Length: 217
DNA sequence: GAGTAGATCCTCT
DNA sequence: GAGGATCTACTCA
Image (cartoon, rainbow, N blue to C red; front, side):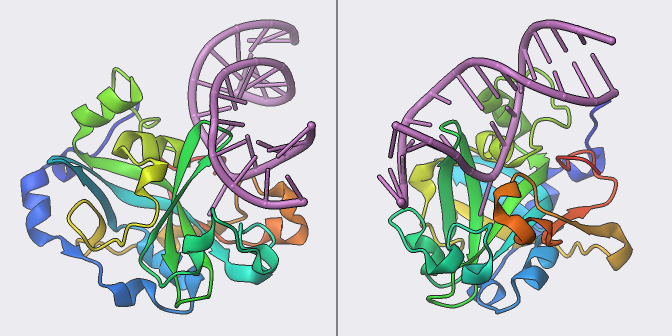
């Protein structure tokens, strides 16, 4: 049944009202609030003129050094997660399971390693290109469902780690869409069972009833 | 429909 | 040298 909303497919109309999120959006202290506010925003990639974009409908917050599920748990600082300690607004992309590229947004200020993992988007522009990248034949809900698929469809790889999200190649834009409280669900994060108690924290947020949301509802 | 194995490679210990 | 913020396909029922 996988369907996407036709009236949202008009890219030209969309790009006219897009506003790139300012650095100040990311450089705040409440990562949970930023995660919730990211729902409904548009993630855009523009690699050499090929534009693909999607509306964020699912993400997970990683709450710094006190969060055992985070790569920065306990203040861990390595070559891989160094960018998490940068100022908010940078991309953090890494390879998971040797196959999947996972796209995160760094938040908070310098030296506070907060990040938000983008887990699912609803395709808006460049769906044909997404099909090429993912090798799929039809644009059903599996196209951009789950963090691995999001990166694949939008063409995000580890080489895009450490990009500040305000250039014209990779950014997140506001189109005035906001979800109400009763449209946003909070739940435990996925695939972080190793984190003990922290695995149960309700740091995953998604839009109710979106077919693109991964995991169980 | 539910459960599980396999892919695949970089990063950290 | 182990294991991971995952996905898909395949089995079995």
